[in-house]
Image (cartoon, helix red, strand yellow):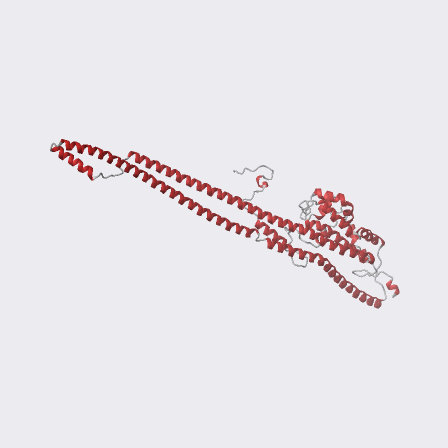
Length: 476
């Protein structure tokens, strides 16, 4: 049995020798060396990233990436194997929009962590347990830091969303004030025009009345006194009897009486004309007063309507505030829980899977030993592939692919996603194993979209040009 244990025993699946090729060990150690203190380098990258995004907009464009690469180019090359900011952007820019948003900034650190995890697995396979322990400690420290980083970026995003919501409310409030100022101006102008029309009509009526009074003096029928008629009859009777002295006396009395009666009639006509003018003026004043009272009632009703609409607008402005805040708080709590638990659960699941594999291989060893004891011989190795012997390093296979444009691109697909951005496209296909909290960000985005004023949106400028960049004739 001692000879059996010193020789490589090939099977159809694995070789159970614990020896490690020197070249593979050197490659694993070479890759592990810069990753042992990767959590400290990531802290430096995070600080440089904050300086590059000095406006705290959560977006890294080409200029910001150049600044970041100038400050931390060495660390980025060691940790992500990138030599320029273009390669960094190609590696992390999932949506290919030309800049790195909050999720893609966190993806930078998650990609480094995934590389550290792969390297830690390789260290365990080559039996470097001390380095494996240090690497796992650094990984868990980086995971805590990533939770902290995403919390900072998420809080900025949430504050930006609340600011946007407040700005939408202020825009609605300003539009409301402008609309009501215009309505008040229109109302005052309409009232003033109506009053001017009434006054003009009243002025015309007064002129017509005055003209009518000047032309027609027979509008008042004044009955003369009985004394005047009696004296006229007496004058005729006395004159008929040739009583000239008495007739002359009656004539003198009649003259005085006719003059006084004429003055009385003229005064009566003037009084009646003034009375008619006064009545018309009173009627006009009453009409103007009634119009003013109606305008005041309309203004009062308009103010009541304004107050009701203002109250409704205030409720509309504050309608989604609690929903947005609740979604943000829930998303923050779930993201923090996912950041603290998902990777550890994934490692636990991987350990269980490996344990089952090791138990299966152990059973195969026992059955193989039993078959050897029965046959007392060794099967020929023949042309078995080298991949069935010894420990195969995953790092070496990765290093062979480093000549590609993005050697770590595949690792970005299995990292923990935090879904900070509200317009994520992975709301339904989340593989985190937790509650799909990415839908909360989309729900917040929908609430903001509902709150925005979308009346008469501007058309896209691309709709005015064809494929040849020629201006389209809109009239045709």
